[in-house]
Image (cartoon, rainbow, N blue to C red; front, side, top):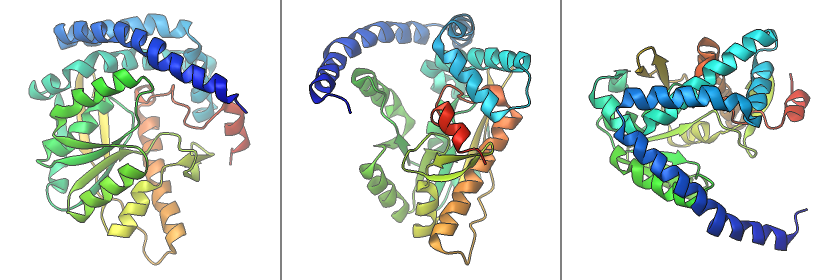
Length: 304
């Protein structure tokens, strides 16, 4: 158990020393990227990430995660996939200051927005392609949506991120009890809410993900059953030339005549399974650095 005094000292150090220094380095970089044309910003960050990331400890983590998902891939294939992933992730970072410009310039193709133009709906996406577009899906459908977000650890950058997303024409709820209350209010008023289904949630339910029992967010399933609201998966794909497609897929078939716990499990399993299909189709476009299965030894323990 961590020493309470040490914990408090670390918290104070992070807040008053580490976070301001990190913000002081990050903010000018963001402003420079915003000034650059989006193509240069995208390819510059992609190239830098491609060159630098393999030298960090994150590279071994990414490769371990890829081995978990694709145990039959050779080391050569994993190395190639990791390099492609780092370039794509760098591009995503370089494109973040230009999301609205990318939409206005026609770089984002949309499909299925008509499905969510009326009535309440739960939208579930994943960290693929460029997930920043997910925060615009409601606005593009002519709706003011509500989205759940996980705060950035750096409190200064977190405030900047919240301010940056003000032009998304959406309400944002910090993950937790307040998010549940906010989303419930949205759905009861016939509105749209969005969340991601591919992050580790220690209090989530265990469903298969690449053959491993994995703690998975169940909020979408619980809300859908409680408020009798449809769930739509929203997929973002990246193509050559900084082109994207965001698709609102057909609504999930909510199982009927099942006990609540079994229905929640089945809906959550379907969401996780669909995200797995997206990843298999375009593996380089997923955020592999995230500890989706927890630590590696825990993933082995939970293997089905």
